[in-house]
Image: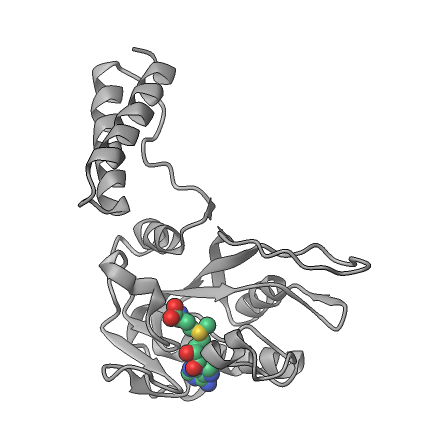
Length: 246
Ligand SMILES: C[S@@+](CC[C@H](N)C(=O)[O-])C[C@H]1O[C@@H](n2cnc3c(N)ncnc32)[C@H](O)[C@@H]1O
């Protein structure tokens, strides 16, 4: 069998499994698929191709997070999530939940009440996940604003990021990893490239930029606008930063 035939065989086999097996999860199917591929590639001597090639884009944020941990955190879990909300990243245990969780407005009993800007930790964590609110100036009554919080203006949002970075850098161990989820947005007809803001700030704070992953949106609502000025954004980022030794 050549590579093309193997991939065709795997696609057909997995389609069959998905039809008859209603117990397994997507994670199980992915594991089965990787397993079959690994063995067939080995059997037919298909070399030079990595079976589990990690890509910079995905529709699945859990896949991105696990890949970040695999590449940059020796496969070890996240230690601390200071903007935990309901822990969407760790749903169904696909990504191991951090041992310490906090939020300014905890929604679950195991979540500590802490402001990420004033954390009481120094050189404590090897890996922190930072997923702050990403809305600014759009009012505080919308669904997303109520669920995740919002800022009065873009300047407030940027000031928040700045203070949080000081606190997070202090909380990280040397060479510790900071994973930042952020997204660019349009506000008042102006494009705000928050990813660029975070990258610049990270360098100012003496972080090494290790990588950048793009999460593609699964749902793409349509909007009716008369004159479009900027590209509609259907993605967000996971930026991977390493604290440099002081
Ligand atoms: C985008 S949500 C996080 C969603 C979460 N990653 C999940 O998947 O469920 C942002 C969270 O940051 C929290 N937050 C806002 N301001 C904060 C602050 N100053 N300190 C800590 N958490 C804050 C909000 O309460 C909200 O739960």
